[in-house]
Amino acid sequence: MAAAVAVLATVLYTIIGVRNRRYDPPHARASFVTAFVSFVIALLVVCQVLSPVIGYSLQCLTLAGFQLADLMQDEHARARQHRIALLAPRPAADVVPTVWVALAVAAGLMLMPYVILDEQRVAAVIVAVCALLMAGIAWRIASAPRQLFGEDIRYERMQDRYSRTRKAGLTALIAMGSIMVFISFVNYDLHTVPPLLHTLQNISWWTWALSGISLILYCTYLGRQSSSTS
Image 1 (cartoon, rainbow, N blue to C red):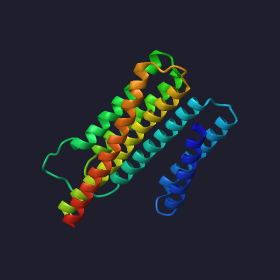
Image 2 (cartoon, helix red, strand yellow; image 1 turned 45 degrees about the vertical axis):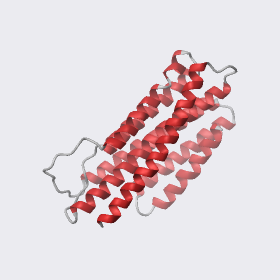
Image 3 (tube, rainbow, N blue to C red; image 1 turned 30 degrees about the vertical axis):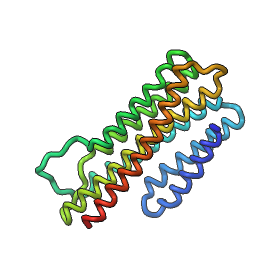
Protein backbone atom coordinates (compact mmCIF):
# COMPACT_ATOMS: atom_id res chain seq x y z
CA MET A 1 0.00 0.00 0.00
CA ALA A 2 2.83 2.42 0.82
CA ALA A 3 4.45 1.73 -2.56
CA ALA A 4 1.07 2.16 -4.28
CA VAL A 5 0.60 5.57 -2.65
CA ALA A 6 4.06 6.64 -3.82
CA VAL A 7 3.38 5.40 -7.37
CA LEU A 8 0.04 7.23 -7.41
CA ALA A 9 1.79 10.42 -6.28
CA THR A 10 4.40 9.90 -9.02
CA VAL A 11 1.74 9.68 -11.73
CA LEU A 12 -0.36 12.53 -10.33
CA TYR A 13 2.47 15.05 -9.96
CA THR A 14 3.95 14.09 -13.32
CA ILE A 15 0.62 14.93 -14.95
CA ILE A 16 0.46 18.21 -13.00
CA GLY A 17 4.00 19.06 -14.10
CA VAL A 18 3.26 18.34 -17.76
CA ARG A 19 0.09 20.43 -17.67
CA ASN A 20 1.88 23.43 -16.08
CA ARG A 21 5.19 23.16 -17.96
CA ARG A 22 4.35 25.93 -20.42
CA TYR A 23 2.20 28.27 -18.30
CA ASP A 24 3.82 27.95 -14.86
CA PRO A 25 7.42 26.61 -15.10
CA PRO A 26 8.26 26.98 -11.35
CA HIS A 27 5.16 25.01 -10.35
CA ALA A 28 5.98 22.41 -13.00
CA ARG A 29 9.51 21.99 -11.68
CA ALA A 30 8.24 21.48 -8.14
CA SER A 31 5.77 18.90 -9.45
CA PHE A 32 8.47 16.99 -11.33
CA VAL A 33 10.74 16.97 -8.27
CA THR A 34 7.88 15.64 -6.14
CA ALA A 35 7.13 12.95 -8.73
CA PHE A 36 10.80 11.88 -8.87
CA VAL A 37 11.16 11.66 -5.09
CA SER A 38 7.90 9.70 -4.88
CA PHE A 39 9.19 7.25 -7.50
CA VAL A 40 12.42 6.75 -5.55
CA ILE A 41 10.43 6.09 -2.37
CA ALA A 42 8.30 3.52 -4.20
CA LEU A 43 11.41 1.72 -5.45
CA LEU A 44 13.02 1.70 -2.00
CA VAL A 45 9.85 0.28 -0.42
CA VAL A 46 9.44 -2.40 -3.11
CA CYS A 47 13.12 -3.38 -2.76
CA GLN A 48 12.62 -3.51 1.04
CA VAL A 49 15.31 -0.91 1.66
CA LEU A 50 12.72 1.14 3.54
CA SER A 51 9.95 -0.22 5.71
CA PRO A 52 6.47 0.58 4.37
CA VAL A 53 5.62 2.84 7.32
CA ILE A 54 8.85 4.85 6.99
CA GLY A 55 8.30 5.04 3.23
CA TYR A 56 4.81 6.42 3.78
CA SER A 57 6.06 8.99 6.29
CA LEU A 58 8.73 10.16 3.82
CA GLN A 59 6.02 10.43 1.17
CA CYS A 60 4.06 12.70 3.51
CA LEU A 61 7.21 14.78 3.98
CA THR A 62 7.56 15.06 0.20
CA LEU A 63 3.97 16.26 -0.18
CA ALA A 64 4.45 18.80 2.60
CA GLY A 65 7.56 20.08 0.85
CA PHE A 66 5.60 20.50 -2.37
CA GLN A 67 2.87 22.42 -0.56
CA LEU A 68 5.48 24.70 1.02
CA ALA A 69 7.21 25.32 -2.33
CA ASP A 70 3.86 26.06 -3.95
CA LEU A 71 3.01 28.56 -1.19
CA MET A 72 6.35 30.34 -1.56
CA GLN A 73 5.95 30.60 -5.34
CA ASP A 74 2.41 31.90 -4.97
CA GLU A 75 3.46 34.57 -2.45
CA HIS A 76 6.35 35.59 -4.70
CA ALA A 77 3.94 36.01 -7.61
CA ARG A 78 1.53 38.00 -5.43
CA ALA A 79 4.30 40.32 -4.29
CA ARG A 80 5.10 41.24 -7.91
CA GLN A 81 1.49 42.12 -8.78
CA HIS A 82 -0.10 45.51 -8.22
CA ARG A 83 -2.91 45.48 -5.68
CA ILE A 84 -5.22 48.11 -4.27
CA ALA A 85 -5.45 48.87 -0.55
CA LEU A 86 -8.68 48.30 1.35
CA LEU A 87 -9.56 50.64 4.20
CA ALA A 88 -12.18 48.31 5.69
CA PRO A 89 -10.65 45.84 8.17
CA ARG A 90 -11.34 42.14 7.79
CA PRO A 91 -10.82 39.09 10.03
CA ALA A 92 -7.49 37.28 9.83
CA ALA A 93 -9.30 34.43 8.05
CA ASP A 94 -12.85 33.25 7.39
CA VAL A 95 -14.44 31.03 10.02
CA VAL A 96 -14.83 27.89 7.88
CA PRO A 97 -11.18 27.63 6.70
CA THR A 98 -10.09 28.34 10.27
CA VAL A 99 -12.14 25.34 11.46
CA TRP A 100 -10.45 23.12 8.86
CA VAL A 101 -7.03 24.31 10.00
CA ALA A 102 -7.91 23.62 13.64
CA LEU A 103 -9.08 20.11 12.71
CA ALA A 104 -5.81 19.50 10.84
CA VAL A 105 -3.83 20.53 13.94
CA ALA A 106 -5.98 18.30 16.13
CA ALA A 107 -5.43 15.42 13.70
CA GLY A 108 -1.67 15.90 14.01
CA LEU A 109 -1.95 15.72 17.79
CA MET A 110 -3.75 12.36 17.47
CA LEU A 111 -0.38 10.76 16.79
CA MET A 112 0.94 11.55 20.27
CA PRO A 113 -0.24 8.16 21.67
CA TYR A 114 1.73 6.40 18.92
CA VAL A 115 4.83 8.33 19.96
CA ILE A 116 4.29 7.63 23.66
CA LEU A 117 3.52 3.93 23.12
CA ASP A 118 6.42 3.57 20.67
CA GLU A 119 4.19 2.27 17.87
CA GLN A 120 6.24 3.28 14.81
CA ARG A 121 7.46 6.30 16.79
CA VAL A 122 9.85 7.72 14.15
CA ALA A 123 7.28 7.50 11.37
CA ALA A 124 4.59 8.94 13.65
CA VAL A 125 6.77 11.97 14.45
CA ILE A 126 7.52 12.58 10.76
CA VAL A 127 3.85 12.36 9.73
CA ALA A 128 2.78 14.57 12.65
CA VAL A 129 5.34 17.23 11.71
CA CYS A 130 4.15 17.08 8.09
CA ALA A 131 0.51 17.44 9.13
CA LEU A 132 1.25 20.41 11.37
CA LEU A 133 3.34 22.00 8.60
CA MET A 134 0.49 21.62 6.12
CA ALA A 135 -1.92 23.04 8.71
CA GLY A 136 0.37 26.07 8.99
CA ILE A 137 0.43 26.40 5.21
CA ALA A 138 -3.38 26.19 5.10
CA TRP A 139 -3.60 28.95 7.70
CA ARG A 140 -1.18 31.11 5.74
CA ILE A 141 -3.29 30.67 2.61
CA ALA A 142 -6.51 31.42 4.47
CA SER A 143 -5.11 34.56 6.11
CA ALA A 144 -3.09 35.95 3.17
CA PRO A 145 -3.81 39.51 1.98
CA ARG A 146 -6.60 39.88 -0.55
CA GLN A 147 -5.58 39.98 -4.20
CA LEU A 148 -7.68 42.83 -5.63
CA PHE A 149 -6.95 45.03 -8.63
CA GLY A 150 -9.81 47.54 -8.52
CA GLU A 151 -11.66 46.62 -11.72
CA ASP A 152 -14.67 44.99 -10.03
CA ILE A 153 -14.13 44.96 -6.27
CA ARG A 154 -17.19 42.91 -5.37
CA TYR A 155 -16.52 40.18 -7.93
CA GLU A 156 -12.79 40.08 -7.19
CA ARG A 157 -13.47 39.82 -3.47
CA MET A 158 -15.72 36.80 -4.00
CA GLN A 159 -13.24 35.17 -6.37
CA ASP A 160 -10.40 35.72 -3.90
CA ARG A 161 -12.48 34.25 -1.09
CA TYR A 162 -13.39 31.20 -3.19
CA SER A 163 -9.79 30.59 -4.31
CA ARG A 164 -8.38 31.09 -0.81
CA THR A 165 -10.98 28.79 0.77
CA ARG A 166 -10.47 26.03 -1.80
CA LYS A 167 -6.67 26.03 -1.53
CA ALA A 168 -6.64 26.22 2.27
CA GLY A 169 -9.32 23.53 2.54
CA LEU A 170 -7.52 21.13 0.22
CA THR A 171 -4.25 21.59 2.11
CA ALA A 172 -5.93 20.98 5.47
CA LEU A 173 -7.76 17.96 4.00
CA ILE A 174 -4.47 16.48 2.79
CA ALA A 175 -3.05 16.91 6.30
CA MET A 176 -6.04 15.14 7.86
CA GLY A 177 -5.96 12.43 5.21
CA SER A 178 -2.29 11.68 5.82
CA ILE A 179 -3.03 11.13 9.51
CA MET A 180 -6.04 8.94 8.76
CA VAL A 181 -4.09 6.70 6.36
CA PHE A 182 -1.14 6.44 8.76
CA ILE A 183 -3.31 5.40 11.70
CA SER A 184 -5.18 2.85 9.58
CA PHE A 185 -1.88 1.49 8.26
CA VAL A 186 -0.23 1.11 11.66
CA ASN A 187 -3.33 -0.31 13.36
CA TYR A 188 -3.57 -2.95 10.65
CA ASP A 189 -0.04 -4.16 11.52
CA LEU A 190 -0.79 -4.43 15.24
CA HIS A 191 -1.92 -7.86 16.40
CA THR A 192 -4.11 -6.39 19.13
CA VAL A 193 -5.15 -2.78 18.67
CA PRO A 194 -5.58 -0.94 22.01
CA PRO A 195 -9.02 0.67 22.44
CA LEU A 196 -7.50 4.17 22.40
CA LEU A 197 -5.81 3.63 19.03
CA HIS A 198 -8.95 2.07 17.58
CA THR A 199 -10.97 5.09 18.73
CA LEU A 200 -8.43 7.47 17.18
CA GLN A 201 -8.72 5.58 13.91
CA ASN A 202 -12.50 6.08 13.83
CA ILE A 203 -12.20 9.74 14.81
CA SER A 204 -9.56 10.41 12.16
CA TRP A 205 -11.67 8.75 9.46
CA TRP A 206 -14.84 10.66 10.30
CA THR A 207 -12.94 13.94 10.67
CA TRP A 208 -11.43 13.54 7.22
CA ALA A 209 -14.68 12.40 5.59
CA LEU A 210 -16.88 15.13 7.10
CA SER A 211 -14.25 17.80 6.36
CA GLY A 212 -14.13 16.65 2.74
CA ILE A 213 -17.92 16.83 2.42
CA SER A 214 -18.01 20.29 4.01
CA LEU A 215 -15.22 21.46 1.69
CA ILE A 216 -17.16 20.38 -1.40
CA LEU A 217 -20.43 21.93 -0.18
CA TYR A 218 -18.89 25.22 0.99
CA CYS A 219 -16.80 25.70 -2.14
CA THR A 220 -19.87 25.00 -4.26
CA TYR A 221 -21.77 27.64 -2.29
CA LEU A 222 -18.98 30.20 -2.73
CA GLY A 223 -18.70 29.36 -6.42
CA ARG A 224 -22.40 30.05 -6.94
CA GLN A 225 -22.14 33.31 -5.02
CA SER A 226 -19.18 34.33 -7.15
CA SER A 227 -21.06 33.50 -10.34
CA SER A 228 -24.06 35.55 -9.24
CA THR A 229 -21.89 38.66 -8.77
CA SER A 230 -20.22 38.42 -12.19
